[in-house]
Image 1 (tube, rainbow, N blue to C red):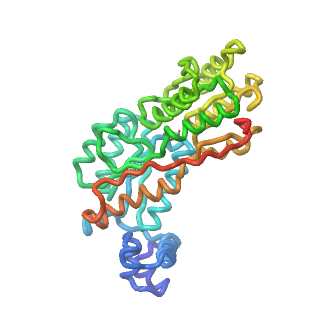
Image 2: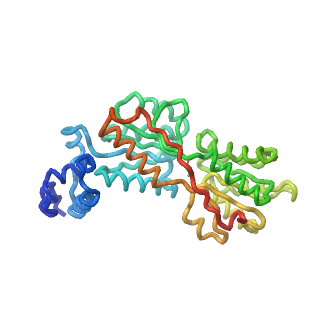
Image 3: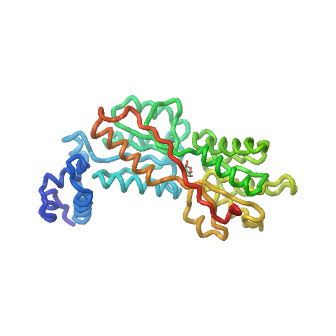
Length: 342
Ligand code: RIB
């Protein structure tokens, strides 16, 4: 299919070439072009197979209208959905997104940042893996704007958008306690990640605030690359105890843990919530169709995506007109379903 030019798009829509150029260079809002017209221009560019030469554009204007996104695990629905929200908001502003998945591996993340630098991206949105502080510090010394999502490093001043993991886990655990559950377990991963650590701390605080001693046998920490065998062992240890010791509820710190956990619980012939109540972080689609739909802590993915893109655009379009750092801790939504026994 022939590649369309800016002029072709302008003629097709009956607008000026300048307007098309402003929109496709992410300057529609700056020139008060309506969202409707911007969307029409972008739709036409897609339909007519308009392919901007990003490198030539970069050399000419110092901008490529691309954002580099490094998420932890592209196969994980949480990150997949978050990436889609980021891409949607970027496209509305005339930006493309280059996707990378670090698999929580700092060496991979470092290589991906280098590749994105060579691609002359205009900004980075990064979910930083454990032990990636050196590369984040190096980015802080550079001029290209970046924002951390999902987790951050307390000792490095950066833009970030996270959720209140402590509060979410505290409220989820308190809800289970109010329903009469007394032996509440927590299955989590990589406690070195600030978000995972906060979830377990919120769980613990809810227990102690309700006069229940934290039992370390009820906290299972699995490696990020956990396999179903790891989950199976953790669940068996939690429910295989004598009646007075075994867990009667589990807080899963991620949906990947929760989905594997439900499979193990069912394989053991246990009923949710009768034998064991469960609550999980992340509103995985599969949770809604479980025999006992799962009570979840849902993160505001659209808000995270929009904020992340707009922090980058703020820095690009008005570097001196915005706060040095924009840092957001967003509230989560607690969606109560049958799995916790109401
Ligand atoms: O696996 C996805 C989970 O881990 C989400 O809760 C997100 O916060 C990530 O860190």
